[in-house]
Image (tube, rainbow over all chains, first blue to last red; front, side, top):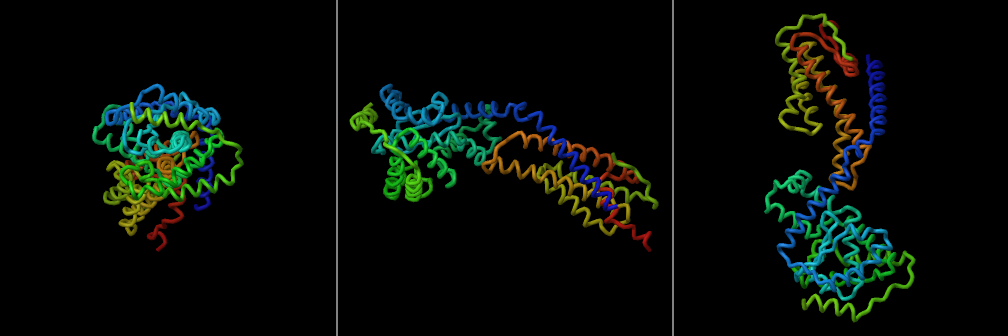
Length: 267
Length: 148
């Protein structure tokens, strides 16, 4: 009887295996238009959260400011084959030192962060880091993991609680990614910068500054507030930088940078 | 696919009800909203433990119900773990996953129908033997009355 069981069981496994191989040919993933649905969900979530942040902070729309940001980041997009049109960068006025990626390929930069950065390379480093989060799909993974797909679907269907959405928005702005995810985004950002001919030391310097200032200004420094130890990240990037071959880096005009920062201070 | 074989001994009302309930246990676990694959198994295991000293007919069907859930668990657990890694780890939805889910759903559907059908048959005191788990149950459950 046991032999009969073994024979039937292996036959059953064989049939199930063949069935799986057969169904694979149909490509259910494509048929269910999963990518398309996820993209739509992300777009709608992005709009929803953008509205929440736009209600809390005034948007900076000065064309000169955005033109300069374009100038700083254009090589990052071009040299890394990232579709510039697919990512929207929003500038919001706030003293908080923060930047974060939103679903729907949106990046929010708070003016406090720009004010905190000392060089164009430091600012580009932050933007490259947020682009890396978008490229690696960290934002949606984090949301589906910590908030749940059901809540996200309810949010876009209009069946949501505003308080809950604000809490989710806070979670996004908190940048509370795991150490592994942050490290991945850091390394990707450094690679983007090297490919674009921009000195990645800007990012390393920024992490070092965060490490030094974090204890002094805990409430202001949200961008690194919940990130893993910035000193460790700076050292890790430094080590990686030594391994990578790189040539001369682009030099940014100091005067233009100062003008850009002044424009932000005096709108 | 399954075959009905008469049992040599007469089955009374009490035994028929017990045997039928062994199949209904897994249904109850689903109906109370416990979607985790382990709960059906636990439910049938508890029922099996409570009835392992009952008459041959009852023991036999409790064991068949338990083994059917074990085999189902072998298919459902990887699907559950796979889904878990997609949501909580860096794994992604892909065609392999959807194809596997389709196969698992089909197996669950067949098992669901077979469970209901067997519960009805056994409630009438009729013996009903499944493929795969039937022979396994026969090799494990012995008729003590016959041995003596």
